Amino acid sequence: MTEKRYLLRIKLDEVNPEIWREFVVPAGITLDRLHDVIQTVMGWTDSHLYEFIIGKKHYAESAEGHELEAGKYRLGDLVKQKGRDFDYRYDFGENWLHEIVIEDNRYAHPPIVSEIECLDGARACPIENIGGVLGHKEFCEALNDPNHEEHEGLMEWYGDTYDSELFDKGEINDGLIVFERWSRDRYLPWREGRSVKNVSD
Image (spheres, helix red, strand yellow):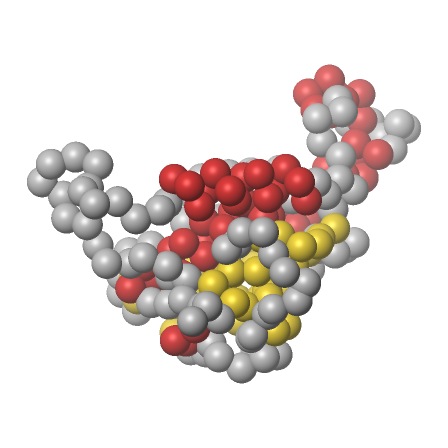
C-alpha cells in the first residue's frame, strides 16, 4: 500500500508580502528530515538551530532541557488532522517563526513525480543574518529604492543576486531530488564505529 502523503503549506510569520510554499511529504517523515526539507523549500542554508512546536511540546535536533529529539518522531504520529497547524522556528537569534498547516492529510492529486515535491510558492527567502523580520523589511526597501542612502552599497554587494519576488519551483525541486538521493537508507554507516538508526521514511 502506498504511504499517505501530507500537503503542507508553510509561511513566514510577520513578513509582508507573504513568503510561502506548498509542498508534499510522506506522512511518516521524521521531524529532523522535515527540517531538511523545509530548509530546501524555503531557501535557508541550515546554518542555525531549529525547533518544531507541536501542541505544547518542542522538538529539536538534540534533546536538551524540555525539548524532545526531532529524529525520534514522525510527523504523521504527531499531527493527523487536515487543517491542523503547528510551528517551526529557525535561528533563535533572528527568530524566524514559520506556521505550517496540513492542507490535505491524504494527498493524491495531481500526481507528483517524487516522494517529496514543492508544488507552489511565492517570493524569495530572506538572506541569513539580515536582522530578522525588521532587518529583512529594511533591506528590501533599501535595495528596491534607488534614492535610499544604502541602495548603492547594497547593489554593489548583492546586485541582481537577490530578487525578493523570485520563486523558482524547478530549482527547489532539483534540491529536493538531491536531498532524497543523499538521505536514502544505506546498508552500512558511512564510517566504522557508528550504528545505522532505523529512521527510514
